[in-house]
Image 1 (spheres, rainbow, N blue to C red):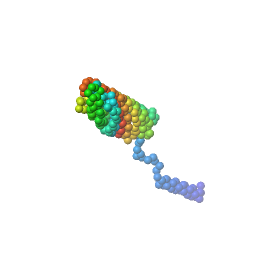
Image 2 (cartoon, rainbow, N blue to C red; image 1 turned 30 degrees about the horizontal axis):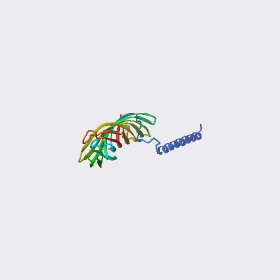
Image 3 (cartoon, one colour; image 1 turned 45 degrees about the vertical axis):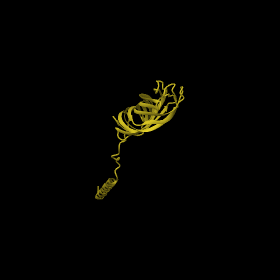
Image 4 (tube, one colour; image 1 turned 90 degrees about the horizontal axis):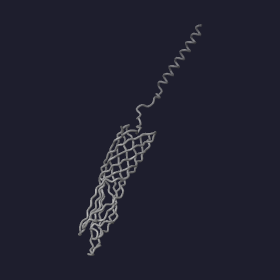
Length: 263
């Protein structure tokens, strides 16, 4: 190889090296195409046990029919009763526990809860008593009717859809409530008073939306309607034991905000 050929080869090698170096430097100046770091992980997966608490309000609607009441007693007068309804807002505090199963985005399970309720309905009226006996008297009496649901437990099925950590759902099941019904009639001819407190069964339906803020903690809003069947009871009379009957029923609308911990 002559000197001219060697010089040409050396020049070519130097040019290739310079080009490669320039390309490397240009590439180093370009921004890196790495995946962004520190992006939050979405909370997913609802399967398993959970436990939590709720606060909210309750709307109690009571219905009392005393048109068949004879508060003075059979043969002494018939009270002109009425079929009345009343509503009252109260508070709510409770706890809940449940278990979920999940298949793809379908979530289904069962939940039990217990709530303490505040508030009672009250209907006051003035009814006229007319004689059905021999004395031909007419008497005005004041009637007070009250209802209250102080404790409530439900056992419900739930079904919902998981949208990347947010789950709207529907729920339905059975309810049992501690219901107190009161009836009081007072007039110049006597008093008829009856208080009854019983655990009564009913149905519950509703829905809500729950959202996971972490893998283990979720928050939710829920609305439930609870209905109890009508109940008739015999009341005592002022003059004898036959005071007729009073029929009552109650239903509740509950609005709750809650938080759950998922195990």
